[in-house]
Every structure is written in structure tokens, then in C-alpha cells.
Image (cartoon, rainbow, N blue to C red; front, side, top):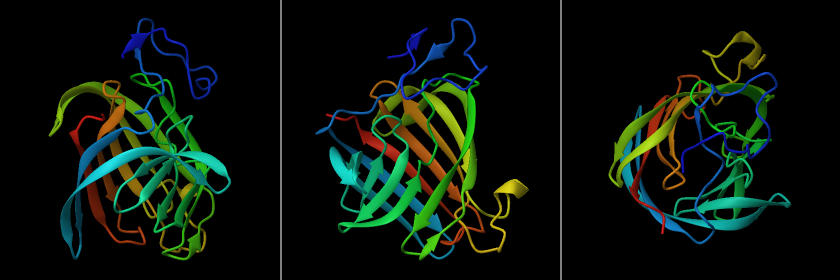
Length: 224
């Protein structure tokens, strides 16, 4: 639920940064293990487009020797840090194909409007055969707003995120040898009811190794 003045989870807020008096905050939370829900994934790119409906199941997974929170679908298992719910990897057909260490950094709990955070993470992708240098990211909560998806209309925190290695991020984030990277600009809408990201809009920029493209994920039914 949306609460004011609740206790932070998933680590303290950055030093010297506090929410405004009486501001609405959201603590860390995702559906309990065993919950199921459906999403629609719309993918557009330079040479293809697709729309896919998938069932997602929340489960506990062992990921590189640590416990992770898995979002299992027919396409892949997205592995989240169970404390922060930031992505730490992707598993396909029993094989780790993506790792993010310490995590992708989309969330910093608790959320409140105006909060900003930044950091670095090491990203590897076995499909590309690359382990990139540490890449920076920056994120902020832009608003709490009403968002309508196929599952219904929800009040959601809008998290704006950008980062990676590519042509548009600040100079200190560039790959010094000029390789193709994994630069993205993303918006995620997290709703405390039903404790899930109800919509994500991820844009891959031209310098991304997969090529420019966009992936929109929308909630079709609430977790049960």
C-alpha cells in the first residue's frame, strides 16, 4: 500500500537525501513465491516486430551460487535480487545468458517522487560474447500517476532510467574501445497494489548490440 513515513527497506536512502514531509513512499515488494500472472510483450525493431502473451510465475532460483527471485516464463527466467528486485541476470534453457553485477539499478527503495539515484554495474551477455566494463546508470521517480493497462487502472510510481555503454550517455560511461554496447532508456511503472511493475517501456538506442528497438511489457492480469 502507499504509505507516508514508513520504514525503508532494501537499504537506506542516499546520504543527505530525504523525502519531502508527508511524501508518499513505497517499500520494496513483489508478489509472493508461487504467484502467477500474465503479461503482454510488444517488441519492435529495425527488421521485425512481435506481440507475445506470457504467463509469469514467481519462484526461488539458485543463480550463480546465490538465492534469487525468479520470474519464470516460457521465453526465459529473469532473476531479480530478492531484497531490491533489481535484475541480476537472465537464464535461458538452463543456461545463464545475462548477468548484472551488482544489479541493473532500476529500483532504490523506498520510492518517492523526486528521488534520484545512480551507480555502476558490470553487464555481460553470452549471446554477444561480451563482458563490458562497469557502466553507469541514473534513475529517478518522476511522478505518481494513473496508468491503464489491460489488467486495469492503477496508481503507479513512474521510474525513469537510463544507462549502459553507448553513444548517448555521458562521456565517463563510454566504452573506451568503441565497441557496441547495451545502452537503454527505460520507464517503469510500479504499483504498490498489486506489488508489481504493471508496465515497462524499454528503448534500445542505436549503439546497442541488438540494434535500435523498443520493448513494451504490460500486465494482463493481476498476480494470484
